[in-house]
Length: 333
Image (cartoon, rainbow, N blue to C red; front, side, top):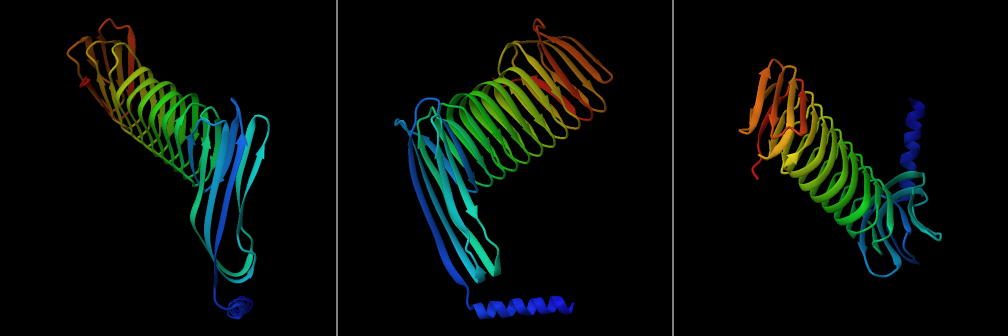
């Protein structure tokens, strides 16, 4: 205890000797441009910095970085520092922000109030983005996108490409007017898609929710405790797996459908068009099922199982739940 008290006393003396806190604003600005051509890749490591990427018609990638941090320090040691490393090859541009922190003797408070990347580039540039808490906003893009974030959010608007792949921890994903194949995975974050004309879609989240509306595609959706809502969706194939979350599905495509849903304790609400063609099978453990479809034929309801035919029975609708409730009705349009 005496040793701890002595060290504390020495620390107080050092702070007193050092005098009042020294406050300073660290300001860094970077502006770099690179000539590029079709097939170029941009690799960006942006940490906690926010990223905005917009297209232009020039065959140039321009990167502007703005960094503002307030540092208040009492004692001895080096102040934090920031730098950006730029590197280029024939077919790739590399940009990496580097925040440097150093040990000190005394007290230091660092408050960041601006850290951003503003990028103008031709929309054929393939994007590889890796960050922590910074948000990403991309609009009007025509090349593949690969993003990995921790707590940051991703917003994509008017993107048309072969593939978008997103991986986040606690951040949210918002996608508006997307064409292409999508793979998005989050931990606690939500995934929202509006007006997607998509091919293959794989979305997965643990505690987050998934919301898809006015979209088309072949969907594979995986959830743990989150809920999923599909409104006005035309799904060529739909495969959903959930645990405790609830599933609300409204399919507006007619003809043969392929739907496979498996949940544990969650409820399932499914709306279908009158001209859907499929063999229906619902299996339950302690759950219940109600089918309100005037066009259904050969309806058989037994203990833990409901079957029937819709139209010519060309497609397949399979729903399995343990303790949840299943209800099937006609779609509103």
